[in-house]
Length: 103
Length: 121
Image 1: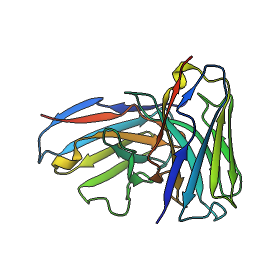
Image 2: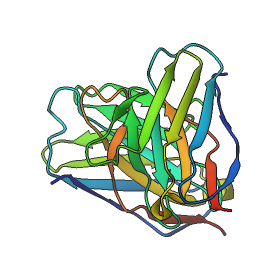
Image 3: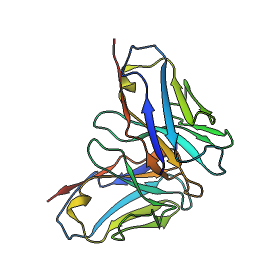
Image 4: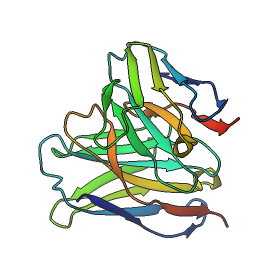
């Protein structure tokens, strides 16, 4: 079965930190990858699609990279509004999520 | 402005059939490249894809929960309906519908607020 493995599951960081989240696919998927941010009790928000294309209105501190089996979401300087859970998604599969907590 | 809203029963008994409706506005599901999908999230758990329907009526189902799922669209009513047969308590979750814009590589850019479904006798 195809799987997306996201790491870490939890990340503790401070405002201003550079944060990186990784998603690995069990087989090559070209650049068919999206990243979402979800806050408690809210619907997910699309941040990035096609591995590195920033969705309209998303701050430029968010960036995505990678191809085939390894992908990263980077937040260049963590802001208070960024503490949330992040998910990667390929086709019809989501990763398990990464919760970004205040250190 | 694109909006989507989910509706359906809050409480369903095990083995029953669950029917959820996504009513949307601000786009047409007959426009090339557009799709609407259903995603769910059990309490405290990760997102899980269920089904996706394209403008041309092509459909995709999750391999993990595909059995018993049917997705349909009514373009004239701007609605997408998901039916799930033989529900189980593990199907308790918040169910979201979401819009996929053309050329977004399955990225879902607008989501509904979600509807909570509890499966219990």
